Structure formats: structure tokens, C-alpha cells
Length: 98
Image 1 (tube, helix red, strand yellow):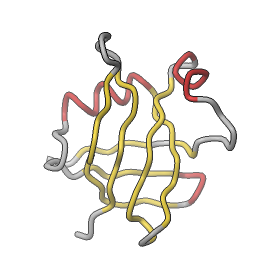
Image 2 (cartoon, one colour; image 1 turned 60 degrees about the vertical axis):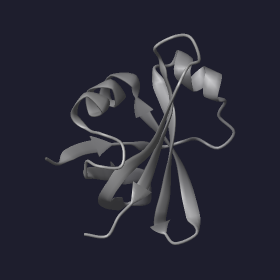
Image 3 (cartoon, helix red, strand yellow; image 1 turned 90 degrees about the vertical axis):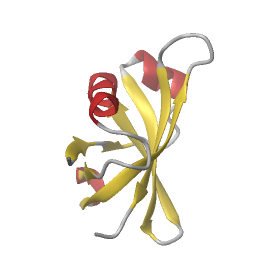
């Protein structure tokens, strides 16, 4: 099963607490250009829906980032949660060749 998600490029100098208050989760995309990573944000509702439909390191995700004109196949490499709340704190995506 493939899942499609759209993320936005994270604004320079933005604070993670402020992003979370706005309903956005910080994320990062690795491997799309060999050594360069891109900081992203994803809507909380989309992230929760994504994690219902996808498993880390198993499910292929079609990730779209319009600001950098990048579309590609990724997997979720890591999901970080708040230590005592059930809130998603951070997502890591890794680009795969398919």
C-alpha cells in the first residue's frame, strides 16, 4: 500500500514549540540529494493519519514538497513522541530509490 503526503519547507529560524502550537510537526527529509537534508513541517492531522496507514521502515510514502519542487518515494525512518503525552514530536523521512 502506498500513501501520499504533502509537506512544507520549514521556515528559517522557526522554533519547534511555536510550530507545534500552530498545529505543525517538525520533520526532516534525508537522502533526497545524497548528503543534504531538508527541514520540513507537516500538519498534525495529516501526520496522525499517516501513522495510522504507514509503518516505520516498511510502508512506501509518496512525499511531495512543493517549495523545493521535489516529489519522491520515502519511508518513515523515525517517529519521536512526547515523553509522557501521546503527541507526535518529530518525523524523519528517508528517500528510497524505486
